[in-house]
Amino acid sequence: MQQKAKKAFSLIELMIVIVILGSLAALVMPNLIGKGEEAKRKLVCVQMKSIYNGALDMFKIDNSVYPSTEEGLEALVKNPDPEMYLNYSNRGYFKDKKMPKDSWGKPFIYINDEGTINLISFAADKKEGGTNESLDIKMSECK
Figure (cartoon, rainbow, N blue to C red):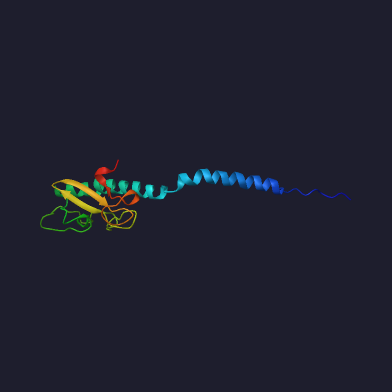
């Protein structure tokens, strides 16, 4: 009777594969670390530009002015002054009638400086100022 030869990996072959996978991980991981925060920051810039080029521009087209700083982005959800904004869209300017939030779950800061609009996110630390990943993100500085 003939016995069939069992085919399996030897310990040496397994060790070589593990070393190769470990080496690849050592090369790839440093490039991936920190990319999550970078992606969040880029997403915030995209959101800001979308708000500005979408909802804020539509508000201005309908009402001839941007909302004041005091009215803020809330003016895009609910008419802040029906007597002043006679052409205000009865649906508001956000599809779901919810205030947009940045990547860290905080609302954007809206500033209207005599028609010059800026949106700000306080980023990861959720407070004004900061450095590195916590540096405030301003629409005027987005690429």
